[in-house]
Length: 525
Image (cartoon, rainbow, N blue to C red; front, side, top):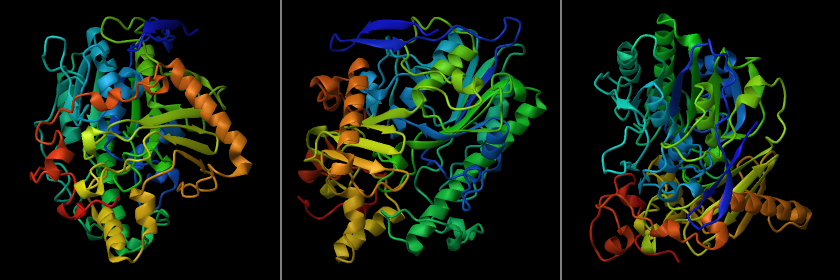
């Protein structure tokens, strides 16, 4: 039975937040090891387990085949730092104060599941990308071991010039060797792939064909450049999967595979225009497979229930038998996954998820973000844009900084500049109305906005009311007129802080995540 814990939120509003459930495993059963295998910028559907012909992921597929494959898993916030903060804390990004932003200071009071498990006897470590980018210090100003001890010494030659030389699996093996016998462990395997940049043409060089791609989303041009970009991304996804396979082999050789709860996923959607950093289905919809023989009753199932990242921390803690969160963690809000693990069909109440965002990358006046809240329920996605005078991807004259530079972004920008096609630019970078509504089943690319259709007026009103009611119960500052606080939170990189004002005054600033020609020569307002 869940118990409800009332907390005093930032604006003195009581929100009902769920604590961790009592353990359900027998006292004599060993506590499971916990492995999170998280890619950086990998979209839902781009795995062979989902039927994708141009991305081969045999090891992700194995986890799905021997466990559960989720078709409606979401991150509530489609950017690295806030998404990972949600995973760690079991709280939604609008409940995490500064940690709801990108490039932030992670408040010390919001501990994560790795820290809590380490305090409860787990050996903790990570390799690759943990939480970030940002700064996570404890109350004394010391760097937190927020994902455990770093394992990064082993290197290996990567398959392309842009892929990391981190021997992720080799570093996991070093961690496994260090883990004390008889003691459970928790490990965060985080690749920097398929985050940009890519080696252009590497997909074709490594044997893929442009014709392998069965569908190019309707918000990008379908041409050689874009298809190459997609195949280069596929190579990086497969690199994550390759190391995942080596990790599975190491666990099997050590006799620890079946006592390890394995979650394979990504922090958010692919680093392409209109995906990463926004709130469309391509932004928040993520791949997810979970293997845990001791906890999953009917493995091999495809799960259609809606789940989100806020449920991972309570799941891990419950599996480990942790019943008290304090003083390290605040109450969690997410719903643990044990009902899904123990079910053989749909689970009551799992018919929707909430999504949203605040400030991601900078590049707007007064370090403003682009606030969105939304709800995906059934086939419908409702989004509310709260600052429609702002550019969703960042100001054009400062390089659309909330969209990573790459071949597809360049192609979309050049088509507008050449006067060849403006539709793709409008969909990817243009300003938006206050409300958007999409029938994702009929329109998976979320192109046909139904918000003004009389046919959908009642459904839109119902979704708006449900979204706002749930966000108020969670203490979301934006629901109480205090959303500007997210723009006021400090940005952690001095070299790019105040980017808009400094750049517009003539200062040359580093913006290495976009290309120099991403900057428009003049404002487009």
